[in-house]
Picture 1 (cartoon, rainbow, N blue to C red):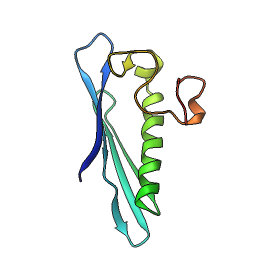
Picture 2 (picture 1 turned 180 degrees about the vertical axis):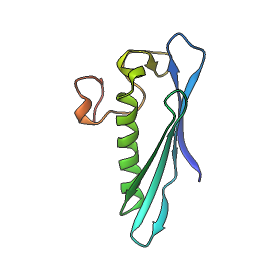
Picture 3 (picture 1 turned 60 degrees about the vertical axis):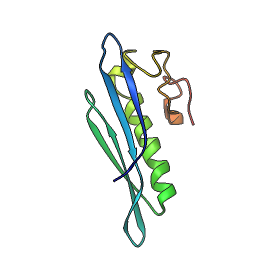
Picture 4 (picture 1 turned 30 degrees about the vertical axis):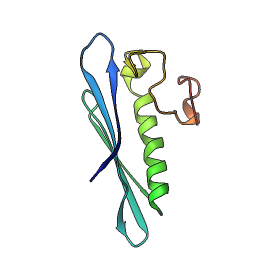
Length: 106
């Protein structure tokens, strides 16, 4: 699996970073594509999505990744940030269902 996008998120009061990776979609069978995302420690979550095309699998993976990040206790407590800022934005738009807690939604 090839990584096509990655970012290190900041954790407040820590030199540690939390890695986030998106892998290239892969065809699973004739009608299904899958896409994998990984969130590093301390969240340590693997997200697998399926779609009818590589584009759909990737788009769904990005949405699920955003939902996973914005729903963490680290984010909700203001301890997860991006680009050395803890202003609520993590470098990836949040699903619209998170508009009450995230600054940028899609």
